[in-house]
Length: 295
Image 1 (cartoon, one colour):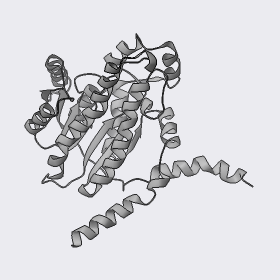
Image 2: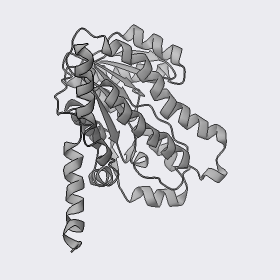
Image 3: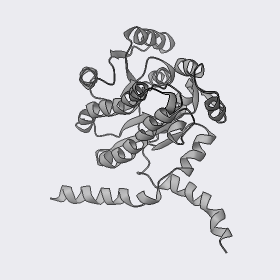
Image 4: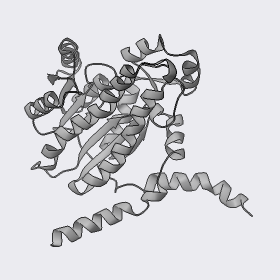
C-alpha cells in the first residue's frame, strides 16, 4: 500500500522545488550595474567577462589592487569594456561601505568572495576557522548590509538581484571541510530569510552551488587538502570557471533562488530543499505587505 507514495515522493520533491518560490521574473543586466565581490579571479572574473560582454556596467571588488588591475585589463582586451575596480577587504564593513557608495546604485550584486583551508577540525587552528567564517559568511553580511539600503531606495523599480556564491559543500557536509561547509551552509539561511524580507521591494535572491571549479584558489587548495576529501569531492566532478559563471548568470537573470551547476548539484538541491515549511509563506508575506500599504 505504501509503495505508490514512496515511488512518487522524489517527483513530489521535484515539483515542489520548482513551484515553491517567488514568482518567476526576468532580471535584465544590459545597461545595468553589476557589482561582483571576489571579482579579480576565478568565478568572479569569469562572471565579469560574461556580464560585460552582455552590455552590463561592471564593478569589481577584491583585496588586491594589482590583481584587480590585471582583471580590468583582461576584460578590456576581451570585450573592449572598461570596468570599475575597488580594493577592499569584505571583513572591513567601513571599507566595503565606502567602495559601494563610490560605485553608485547597484542592480545586480554578486557576493562571490570565498576562502577555504581544507583540514580535519581536530587538526585545524581556530584562527583558520575564524578566517573562513569571517570572509565567507560575515563578509557576505557586510556587503549586503552596505548595498541593501541603496538598492531598496533606487528610482528604477525594476527587478534587482542579490546572488550569493555558496558551494556544493554548502549543500552537504564534506570530510575535511568542517569549517568551510559551516560557512557556506550559513549562506543558505541568510538567503532564505533575506528573500522573504526583500521580495516586496522586487529584490530577488539567488543561491549558487558550484562543485569543485578550476580556479587559482582550487589549484592551491588541491595541494593541501586531505586525501579523503579529494576522493569524496571528486565524485561530483569539476567544472571550468566559465561554465559555472554561465550557469550562475543564467540563474540570476531568471530570478531563480536555487542555482545548481551540474546534475549532482541539482539532485542535492532537491534532496535538501526545506520547502514544505515555506509552502504558503510567500503568499502570507505578500498579504502582509498589502495590508501595510492600506494603513
